[in-house]
Length: 446
Image (cartoon, rainbow, N blue to C red; front, top):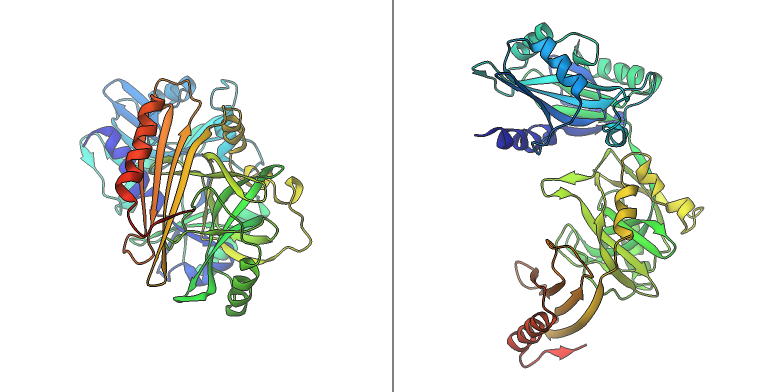
């Protein structure tokens, strides 16, 4: 296995498997174990220190280097003739200020910024490889090699005996000292990531029925923030937190304000959301926010609302970890002050990415046809669309054909097909051929 594969595997199979726990859930969600090993959660970027022969690299999980010569020089002094692969968190240090991952993003190229690395895991030392659960051995080695403080140091652990002790330590570090949170692990058990819950006021963009297989009950909602007037960015899906009575009532209320949309947004249950007028504001709690997954930056729909939803593009967005509906915010209004993007960017760095995408040329919908067919009470939908991307980039297609095939009675309810071309005549021929092949007797054009 080469180094690039090792790094990405660690990101997906170890770092991404930490179990999120809210501060008020320590007593119920953290497993009961004989001992707990606790360290401060640092909000930076996962990094790897790789030393082979005379070469030292500080890499992210995609095998791309962090260019900080002063850190590399410090590692030369610390590691000397040792070779190995070490895991840590690289972050921007401010005295008496909570770490934020987006601070590192903004300051990593500033040579005067105080960038540090806290080491917490060891994958390989000289010719020996270490298993994930060989904690005691690894932390002894790390504490011998790396200092306990400085710009590159071993992130020491505190040994505790009970969940009550964990609660006390959380209050001390996260609340009294304003640190990010805690990382807690058992001897051979899972690793928990404990933070105060995050709260957001978000607008409901769509809904899906089908709770407990009852299609008169609300199951999920699509939520978003306002980027600018009449423009909304989807930021997630909420399933939990509704009472039975709320699911019953909201299903009826949302039905009264449903609107058309030129795109289909799919719920966690693989059903298409019914879009509604953006008027309901909800308070949602989440244990964390992520901006990346295994495919790269998380992308969600960016809509313009003008009596119906029009898809602008898929823009960089977020995913909320274990989101829960808390209540409706009747005291809030649908505006940037109350439901704006700033709620997200106070936690993660996203606004620059959204603005960058908004500044690009807007793609143009060149052609669209929709067909429906009802069989035994089940309504099937086929949509065919062609966009002119307005792109001048060599590695991005000029025209995109997109087909959506939805059938509620099929195991795979939603099927999609995408074809691209740099020739307008070719893409229009693809459009016509697909419709001619698919649409037979019984289908009606909408």
